[in-house]
Length: 237
Image (cartoon, rainbow, N blue to C red):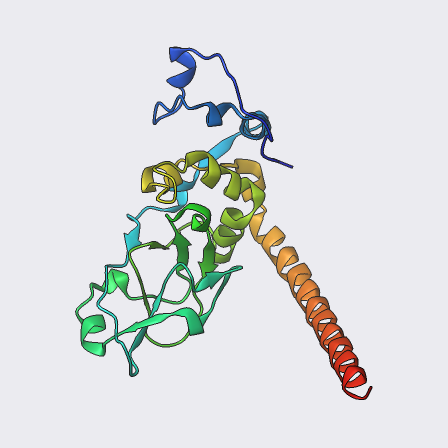
C-alpha cells in the first residue's frame, strides 16, 4: 500500500487545483499515485486535522553545549529515536545547570510525544516518552502534548503508513536538509470515525506488537545459538 512510483511523474494541473493545497505546492510529487490514493481514501468519509488534538504550540529543544565527559542530563536527539523507542546510549548530555536554565516546556514529562521534524530520511520518527528522570530534546526533535487523544494513539497514528505518507508528502527543502513544518503537521488528516475507536485499536496493536517482539527475540536467540555452534565446529576441525 502507498508504494512510491518507480518512474518520473508528468502531470497537468491548474491554478484551481494547486489552490486546494494550503501551501500552494505545485511540484509533481503531489500528484504521485500514492498521494492520489490517499486523497481518495480520505474523501470517503469525514476527516479531522491533527491540529484538533494539539491545542498548544509545538516545542523544540535548543542548540545545546554538550558535555565532553562526565554525567549530566540526557538530550534525546534524532539518532536516539529508533523504532518507537529511545536508545539512551545514543543520547548526548548537558550540565545540570544548563538543564535548570531551560524553560519548563522543554523539560520532558511522561506521556510526551517526541517527533523528529527534519533531516531527510529521519523525518517523522515518533516515540512515547515514558522514562524516569530529567531529559530534554535537541533542536531537531519536537515535543507534542496531545489533548483529546492518548499519547500512544498519536504515536501509532504518526508511525502508521497513513501518517508516514503525509510526512513524505509535506517534507520540503534542499536535499539532505528537508523538514516538515508545524503548520504542515497540524494539517495531517485522519478518518474521524476511526478515531472514535482508536484506543481499542491501540490496545489490540499493543498486544500484537508484544507477541511479535517475543517471537523476534526467540528467533534472535536461535540464530545466535546457530552461530555459536558453527564457530565451535570450525574451531574443532
